[in-house]
Structure formats: structure tokens, C-alpha cells
Image (cartoon, rainbow, N blue to C red; front, side, top):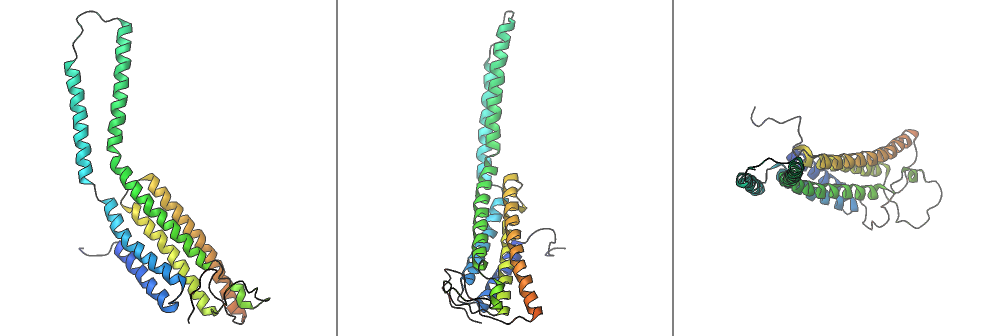
Length: 256
């Protein structure tokens, strides 16, 4: 059915719309936070990902025409060379035959290597573009992790005294839960954006890089969910709320 949604492929438009909605949710809940800035950056990357993934999936026609022309020249030159070789009029000795055969094999290997290089140029160009984009996704995953690094639910228990080395902690239990949820959602979407680059690009190197990003985001999400489980356990135990604030280096002001 035309226009029906596909349930076996990722839709760049839907991923971008989901990230845009998440950005607006973060900005509404924590308008002046560093996490809102990361959400805006992820939204910008998602917009670029639609163009990049489309470019990677599309054939590079000019490059293919150039490669086809070079291959045709190589084949034509090989045929002309073979046609111009004089046929032996006398009996060929075994030593001479072996020398000619060895030289011919070397030429065939070199020509085959040149043809293979030309045939894989397009894949290498696309691979470089994909790996550059995937490295960007790996970097932003670490940035997201930095923002949740010091968001420790244990501070809500109010144990011990503040060291004074961190900014005042002003988040409530509900706000901390939403903050960690947003971080987990962003990490999941980072993996989905990375997967766009290999959805229609069959390359083992790029696929391995995407798998590494997905393993990274899954591992970071597990850490966040451990914090959320502790937070929910505290709530069930009736632990009192205490303030919690931004991570080191995040000087933004927090609002409910």
C-alpha cells in the first residue's frame, strides 16, 4: 500500500521527529541546563544524518562512469597488447616458456589489483563518510554520559555533609528521574541514528563501527537504569527528598 509505514526499516524522518520532540521535552523541563544544549546538538546531527544516510545509499554516478571508463581503457590496452604480440615461428624452449608465463602472471595480477582498486573506490569513499559520522555519534554518547555522571540518587538520602566542591544540588527526586530518563532516551536515539548509516550500505567495517556505538550506548544506558532502580527503591522506602544539582562544569541554573 503506497504511503504505508515500514516496520522493518528505520525511517530517518521519524527518528528526526522523535529527537526533536525529546529536545523540546528537555528544554521545557530543564531550559537552561547543559543537557538541553546536548539535545539541541543531537537534533542538529539527526537533521544531517538524513542527508548523509541518503547520500551514502545513493550510487555515485560520476565516479562509476569514471571507473567504467578506466576499466575499458585497461581492457582495451590489454587486448591491443595481446593482438600485437608476434607468434613464435620456432620451437619455444621450456625455460623461455616459463619466463614468459611468469611475466604474464605478474601482469595479470597487477591488472587484477588495479581493477579491484577501481571497483572498490566508491565503497571506500562511502565508508570514510560513514565512519566520520559514526565517530560523531560515539563522541556525543560520551558527552551525554558526562552529564549524568554525577547525578547520584544517594544524594537524595542526605547522608553526610556537602564537600562544597560541587554547585548546590537543587533537583527533586522527580526531576532527577526525568533527567536520567532523558539521558537514557538520548543514548538510545544515538544508536538509532548510527544505524541509519549502514541500513542501505553493505560494508563490514562500517557495520562493525555501528555495532561498537550500539554496545557503548547500551552499556551507558544500563548504568543509568541502575541509578533509576535505586531512585525508585528509595521512593518505595519513603526516603526524604534532598536537593541535587548540575554536574561539575555545568553552571546553568536549574528550574522545576
